[in-house]
Each structure stands twice: as C-alpha cells, then as structure tokens.
Amino acid sequence: MQELYASGDDLAPLFQGTMWGAYNAATNYANHGLTVRGEYTDKEKTQVSPEGRARRAASTMFGAGAKMNDAALAVATQCVKEGFDFLGA
Image (tube, rainbow, N blue to C red):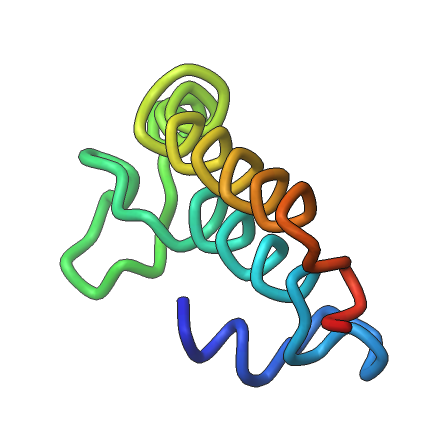
C-alpha cells in the first residue's frame, strides 16, 4: 500500500503525497491487492477463475475489502474534520 501511495500510478501528480492520494492507495489495495482465497486456478497466479472473480467482488462489497474501504473513508474524513484537506495543506 505504501508503494501505491508513493507512486500514485493511477493518480494525477497533483494528488501524489496527499490525503486524497492516501485514500486512493488504501482503496486500490483493498479492491485489487488483497489476497482472495481461491481466486487463481494455478500456482503462478496468472489464471483467474470465474469463481475467483466472484470472490473478489464479494470481498470488495461485503468482506475484508469493504471493511478496509470503510476504514479508509473514516480516517480520511476524520483528518479533514481535524483540519487536513485533500490537497495536503
């Protein structure tokens, strides 16, 4: 997750190193980086099964991914309430 935050691969340079960047890194990891049991059909982790896609979707909406997304939003919201804005000022 720290690498996602530092690099901001999918973020505009404006948001790298900001609260918004941190929130996006956390949700990116929760939605795409968390390990989901049974997602892959091979040991090299190159082939995703249809059941694996369904498990990832379920995790993102209802499971560990959803909990992480909720926590990231709560932290970001609290930081903003305490005076941090999304542009890092």
